[in-house]
Every structure is written in structure tokens, then in C-alpha cells.
Image (tube, rainbow, N blue to C red; front, side):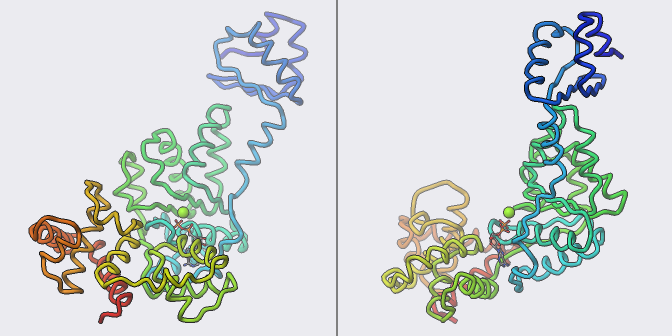
Length: 399
Ligand code: ADP
Ligand code: MG
């Protein structure tokens, strides 16, 4: 193995005295030099460029401040104290996840790994922080990271010759909370490192919680061995049903100092989709604008209302459902709306086709058949449809 200081000495025996003042860490592929000041770092960089460029290993230079900052980054737990179990509203569609999370925060390791998935704005991130905060208050060491942050830290550590520190940091916690792991897709090196961390934590019976916007099997470009770890424990889906949505609206209205009478609740209920983030945003705006009567009383005929409601559920605009497109999400939303027009409003196929700007009844027939098939084959979809059906019924005053 080469020795950096010997190399410097051979080249310039005066400079070696200077280099001896710095902290030098050498591995087979790189040298890391840590200087006390930024000034010295600049000098070293210049010197390397001029005289040591042919050492044959990568040479990295950092000031002591920079080095410390990185260490601090690695040791900070990433937890946001504002997300707790106490300010999380529990209902039918999230109570199981809530219960398991609570259990995990008290007894890290009980359900490891735990994999939670579900759509956006449903409280996944909130729960991860809640687990971390509660665990921390009980004396456990927890660390929260977005998968992307985890990946960036890993790359930085690798570059700076600090990968061992990185591994140590993540392998020495009681709970690792990793958010949005769908973003690990295609990041091969990060997956390798995560796998190592995973094995280290599991062997010590520590707790890992993964969160994603989709089921692990639907995350693309994840190595087979990492995927097998994702699915090796408890996998839970988080959702939002109409009843829970109602409780959340009540809770958030109170939080923002707004009245919780029927008028306010209905107004929010009708104008928001199934995302707590959207509900929060809507209520924040409501605080400034107040209820805009024309918007809430603008109640066109039932079918238009149904379209509005379904569009909102899919995070689309009502007019999207009538436009020409091949976008899967829009097609699915339109087919679902057509299906509900049939089952809830008992419209004829021709009427439905006309409503969606289609030339004749066959398109409606086809779409509705598609939904019926999917309902049979896809349990998740069937559940979603059931929820949507209920909320449309309520919304339109049907029963
Ligand atoms: P996700 O990570 O699933 O996209 P978040 O956890 O970021 O969603 O939640 C979005 C916002 O909604 C956050 O401000 C969060 O506090 C709030 N929220 C979500 N679910 C609930 C709930 N059940 N009770 C109270 N607030 C919630
Ligand atoms: Mg999130």
C-alpha cells in the first residue's frame, strides 16, 4: 500500500512538515486530508494540483468545519416534533396502521420490517415521525430519512471516504424510518447499502419501517434481494374513507379556529378529494376567503355533480373526464364515473355516452364492463370503488 506522507516527503521534504499537521485518512483507493482551516484547504488543493497530481489515488481535502458538518448531518435524527400520535385522527381506514405504529414505537423490533403504503396526503409521513418521536421519548434511538436523502448521504459519504461512518450511523439505531422508498427505484448502489443496513439491523432485532406510495411489488427497478426484504414483514395499506375524512375535517377546522357546524363541514367535504394534505390546504384558504356561496350552492344536475366528485377523488378536474385522452388515470376515472352513473343514477348507456361526449352507447357499455371486470379481479380497486360509491351517494343525497 502506498503511503501518502512518504510520497510527499520524496517529492518535497519541506512540505511534509506541513502535511503532518493535518489529519490524514488513507484507504486503498483514496486519501482524505482534513485541514484545520479553509485557508489551508485551499493551499493543499493548489499544492496537490501542482505537485501531487500523480499519486495514483483520489485525494480529497476538507476543512475541519466541513468534516464536522457532515458528521452532524449523519447524526441528526431528522425527526419533526410537530407530527405526533396525539394529533393524528384515527378512523376505520387508518386505525390498523396507527395501532401497529404505536406498538412499534413502544417495542421497536416487534414487527420488523414494517412496510406501509398508500396514496399521497394520507398521513404516512406523519406516522413515521410520530413513531420516531414517541420512541425517542422512551429512550430509543430513532432516525428518519427520506429515501432520497439517504441516497444523497450515501453518495456523499462514498465520495468523502466516509462510507464506513455512514454504515455505522444507520446500523446503530433502534429504529430506522425510511420514507418514500419508491424513489430508490433504479438507484443500485443505494439499494446495496440499504440492504447492508437492513441485514445489520435485522440481525440485532432492531426496527425498520418503510413507507411508499405503492405496494413493494409495484416498485420498479428494485433488486430482487431488497424486494424480498421489503415483503418479508408486515405490509399494511393506509387509506381514507368518508367517515374518517369527516373526523379529520372537524379536527382541522377546530385547529384553524373555524366553526365546525354542518355548513362548514359539508363545504369542505364536498370541495376536497381524498387527501388530508388537500383538506388542510383547503381549510387554510377557507380561513381567509370564508365560504363562497356561489361555489357551494352551485349544484348542477346530479350527473354533473357525480362527475365533479369522481374527478376530485382522482385528483382531476371535471372537464378532464370528458376530454379525449389515452392517459390511464383519466381513462380509469372516466370509466369509474360512467359505472357510477349506471349503478347509482340508473342512466341508460346512450345517456351516459352522451354525457361524456361519446358518439354512441357502445363506449359506455365497454367502459362499464371494464370496471366490472376490474372489480372482480382487483380487491384493492373493489374496495376503492365501494368507498367512492358510498361517498358519492352521500354527496348526492342518494341511498
Ligand atoms: P403522506 O406522507 O401520506 O403523503 P402526510 O403524512 O405528509 O401524507 O400528511 C399530509 C398532511 O396531512 C400532514 O400535514 C399531516 O399532518 C396531515 N394528516 C394526514 N393524515 C392525518 C390524520 N389522520 N390526522 C391528522 N392529520 C393528518
Ligand atoms: Mg409523505
